[in-house]
Image (cartoon, rainbow, N blue to C red; front, side):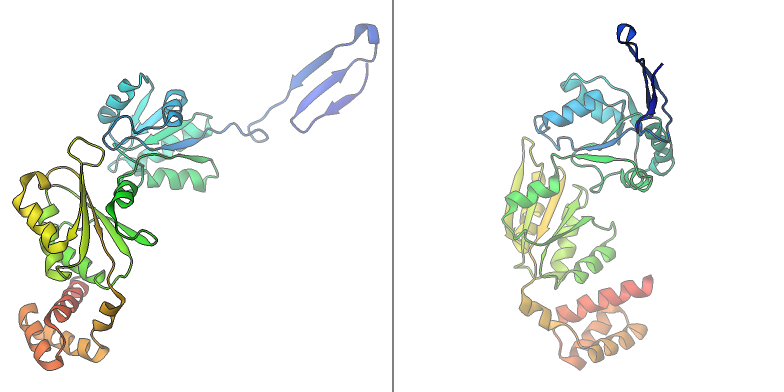
Length: 319
């Protein structure tokens, strides 16, 4: 009998020197520690309205993975049925993802592949999935993006406002005071900023915005993107508020709102530290309305600037 060689892949080949009786016997010595048999997590973008807005690759991934982790299994079934996909579904949503992610990681370690999908668009962007992706990445396993539809990017691409720099803010706070403080913090931001809003709060959010931002600030309202009643309008804030107030249809659907950045000149209209100190003292003793009126008389700063500063200070005190 000939020599015995151990290969890097733990394959041992047995050589027999007799030419008339030559054969090769392959013995596989595999251990999980030496061979990577872990599964992959695929982050798959799905349509945001039009079912045709999905890539061939995404369909193939959804067909071939071992299971699909979905925000709402009932919702994703419509997409899967449309493309003739029958696959195992597991639920992964904001109420269970912290607990469920550990179990999915174990499935990946066992060699199973998993696709992560949200109800619509790209997972993690104001949707569940971050705990799972973080857990998988921290464990050293592969996370593979399968790009596609995204309401944020779709709105930016068709909105007509600058996109060289922008910030995405997700969904706005639920209360009016918190929204006003949010808008005040971004009043002098010079880059484009974007947020999502629901049909239930779009009017209230625009009303709050109009109390803080200049009424001539350009904004884009994009609703029902890729759907039958898709609407994308670029108008001053004052006009946007009129449109949403007067037209019931403009209060239906899911919204992406894009706000133009402030002019550089606007940044010069901030209160000085001494002026802000006066306002803070007044706010300790007076209501916001009274404190603002007195601060305007004392400092000479425009009322809107003082009011915005007062909202921020009030939020600090509440926190």
